[in-house]
Length: 313
Image 1 (spheres, rainbow, N blue to C red):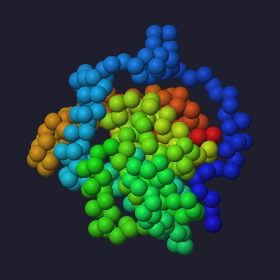
Image 2: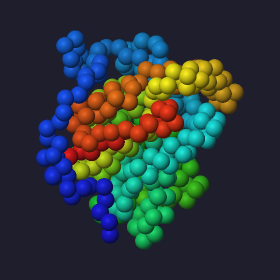
Image 3: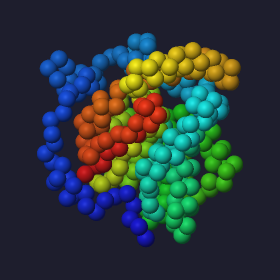
Image 4: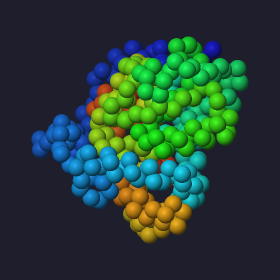
């Protein structure tokens, strides 16, 4: 049986990558005018284009997803014209999981990534075994994966409303094995060290109050050789395309939010939060600062979204 995503050659790669080339610094890394620690200790942050306290942002983001949970998947289809499905398919193809993989999918409440993960295993490895639900694995237990060689995905989300939608979809679509749902904060996961072969987060990390803490937690819970993979809205560099994209985002998406989800403000925030998130290179440096190696990214649709990848070596 193929080995899970925990590379046997990780020690070799670690030696190769022990000396890293100098990289340009950005506002999220240490420089002469400030430090990452100062950024972390700052008492306020952004909520879209507003400045709010960090505790207030967490509460506001919680309310946003509590309010839109039921219409979240419908809105994704409307906003992207269904293209988000292709982005997520590509995301899983990049991950390319193998039988026995233990995946932690953070901010994955509605199950889109988890279901694709299970479908990929079933399609490509028909004899792979999926874990059977273990009643001993409780929703807030640090033991989120079965102690065997079966394939399993643990879906973690801070918002119980999103998890409720995901659990309902799992039952409706017969995803009854190889999956569990747990409530948790990406910045302080109640999960054991070095227990996951892979960590994924799709369209969620920009909503985290302290992104550096979430990256450090991702590094902590991954096994040596484990892979970090993030799919997130990013920055379009072409000025003509960026202008078209910005006009669509600010003029159309909040309107869709009001018509479909009865929540203009939530989708105004989502549009603004994309513009506040670091660009592709800045986020790459943040991932490296968290300890990851072999970090790279792939732009999708000219940078509307990007997939960032890194390994714990």
